[in-house]
Image (cartoon, rainbow over the protein chains, first blue to last red):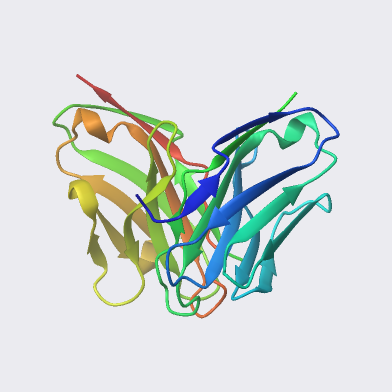
Length: 114
Length: 114
């Protein structure tokens, strides 16, 4: 158990809909990362938050957004869903982002768009 | 920008044989390097990491990796494969003193032959 909690574990939704994925980082970790894992794209970095502020953006679509709340949990919002958004979405957390700390991954949220 | 190349998307070894999974990186600055393992329907678990210091790094489950700057490599080895080692393995790189975003390779699926 990495200590990173993601909900829901599985989600099936229709095209055009909007979903929210939730992540609770390990206790004390200030950094939260979101990654997408799909068969065709592999593991892609989406976005990084540190203590509530966005630090870096990766290959995140404009239809997707994220935020980190004062209690450090994070949400990834996916809207106007398309079939190609079906993937495993990972949340990860770490402590100080400047010292090579280990990034711990949750078990992921499986999203299926039908 | 940094990148990782994993040679061999599928590797099969016999139980008890040497496991060698290859990873080459590209980075404009001395990198941090990681190996993660993903068991079926599970999240990513850190096997080992290299930040600074000793270039031979020992990880969990008997795995180790050696950072070779001259070869820009970080190959993962285990002297004797067990059936439980069957999984997907990802090499990743990050930039020190940056936001610690991990850039992953495409993964290598390891199959153990009884």
